[in-house]
Length: 58
Image 1: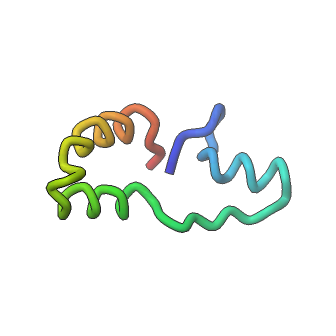
Image 2: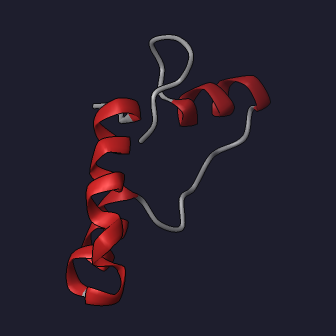
């Protein structure tokens, strides 16, 4: 989940602002699994890790 501009996650901000539920079709964990299990995409693993460290919400 990505950080929003305040204390909420980006998903929570969208849900509050628009009154609509946000339902992901995939998340970062799914992406990590794909990148780890497919050599074709392995080169993207480190940049995605860096992205999660910078923008990820707990």
